[in-house]
Image 1: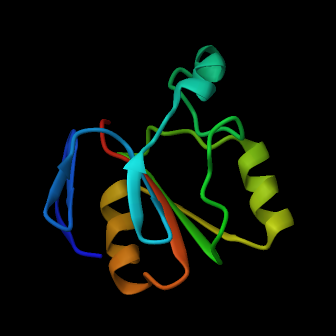
Image 2: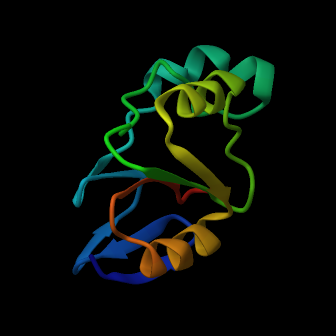
Image 3: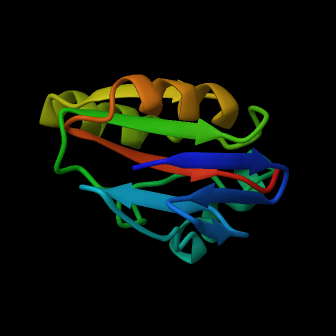
Length: 115
């Protein structure tokens, strides 16, 4: 998987530009469907990553790119990662991409690109 560009509002992976948050699940890229988490927006001031979303747990490491740090990750997600023995790595998206470039094997990701 080649991460070719990242800037506010877009990310380019393997020649395809995405202008929305993405989920990388075992090498496949899809749009993050955050609608299930919108119910928690008022409590966080931003739509958080919650257990209501389709999180790609089939991995040893899950990297979460938080944009510039704005994406909240709910405690339930952190707890579920512990139960599943998945190492959770939460970083600003630019740093998350750098980490993915180094450690792509058995790693899934959720990358927030819009703030």
